[in-house]
Length: 411
Image 1 (cartoon, rainbow, N blue to C red):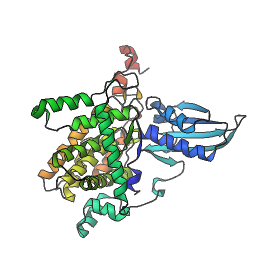
Image 2: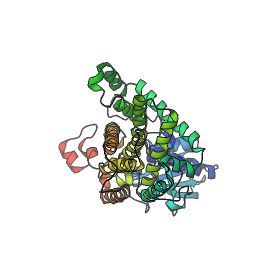
Image 3: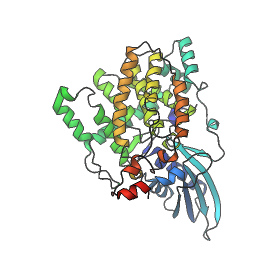
Image 4: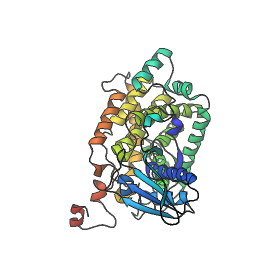
């Protein structure tokens, strides 16, 4: 498995696979062809189907500026390795191709070149399953975060400190901002209002503290293209920071405790990414929100004193109870149902942590097993439920509203 530094990326929303990934690909390609007269970018599959709503076109054109860019959208055509395919062609003054690169945005801002296998990335972790990691930690007496430090080196704490600072900043910006989110759906920011209502109403609203407001704050920042952390993706980026901030509020944790929890969350996310997927276009929203819930549940359980077995149980529940969750963004925007899902997944993560702590960690379905189920479930989902905005809520609710006949036909 790769370093968790490849999982936690800092970038602009609203989508790690639709904005951060294509932007990185565009920047890398332009470095190789700085004298190109123009560049043609062809987007395929899910990347094309929801690219405009996800601001993919803006991310690419900004990365390639000042070079002229021609964008070609092919939502009904797939490249072989992943639904988020893209092709960059450098053209001379006569419009002739002088260089070409083809690859994929595979989730969380990661890029895979055509023909490259995920396993070819630099490996940091020799063990690739929860079972093997738990066996080693049981033998050595290490906590999960200590295993991360052993593999990553002490420099990982400086990186995670930066990640935590960025997460906190996104929460604070989101709590202070107000107004309507861009994109045309007319969705207003709610984080600041929720925060004030919780504060004013006291005990009646304090079951989960300010947790929902924190999650909404980050998700709304993401929807505006704000700077956030992929945890493991942009669309699910509000779950983990809100849970960490919530636990810190109630336990007055030191930064070291939070960073260790971040390390454990990163390990969980890495296992999901390595053995299944964190890409909504590949496995639906279970790979994004479900993964984020598992990561947050594991982090909270650790801070609250859980054993490695209880942490594994909490992560397993966080993923298991999001199995089959579809990715059906209305108008291709990361707003409906994405923003609310962050808040609900955050509260579910805390419930998973509580449930695991009540137990001794013994349970039937292992984390490794639920990963394989999630992967297969995602592949079994029709493409209209995997980030193409052609089914589910995206078909039922459209803006501007369409007639019932139009809705039924999918036109």
